[in-house]
Length: 233
Image 1 (cartoon, helix red, strand yellow):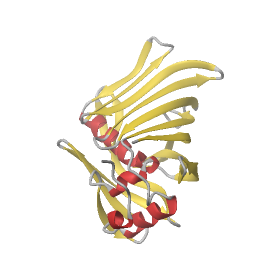
Image 2 (image 1 turned 45 degrees about the horizontal axis):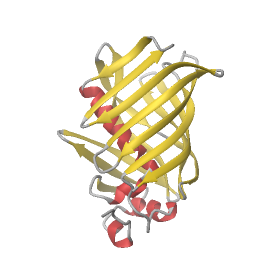
Image 3 (image 1 turned 45 degrees about the vertical axis):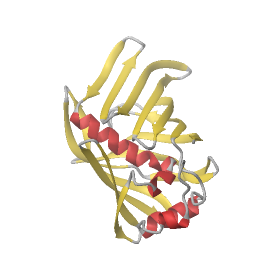
Image 4 (image 1 turned 30 degrees about the vertical axis):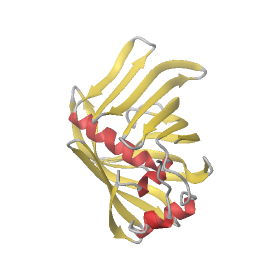
């Protein structure tokens, strides 16, 4: 039977997490088993690169953390390439193919696994009912933040969730950044939220960015907007 997010179910959670679940309208709802998010945005590979627009759909598994992101990369009305990012059974994989022929990225390995599970943890912002389940473990930090952690097999990741005014507003973690040729390095990563909206009947993050903190400064590599959120129970 699907779990209902009740006041008793969230009583042991850190206070900022509790406030967010109440304000977003999650209390009294059912934890979904699968989630679909329709997105649009733009992405770039370096600070010197041009932005490339994308349209994407992402599906998530909640009980056994996993996701698949499928994006069409656009130049004007034309689809110039396809990108996929996935995490299944503890393994992540990232692929980008241009013009249907050329693989410009095909990455997997322990660094990708860690980054992919962190991505899933971050994007629970679109299905925050999962915060009340035993899939995520919480450690209080202060009145505006808490540490959330998730484990799949031998892999555990954690991050600091930041809240303001009862809303989720940022996420900080050290994430493996792909350097190519099978290499990666732990790099400070954040996802500042810029707008909230009514999605699936809840007050959820609607737009934000992905940011790497590099020695030379912050590099914002993606800007994304969720246009639709759907739940299966």
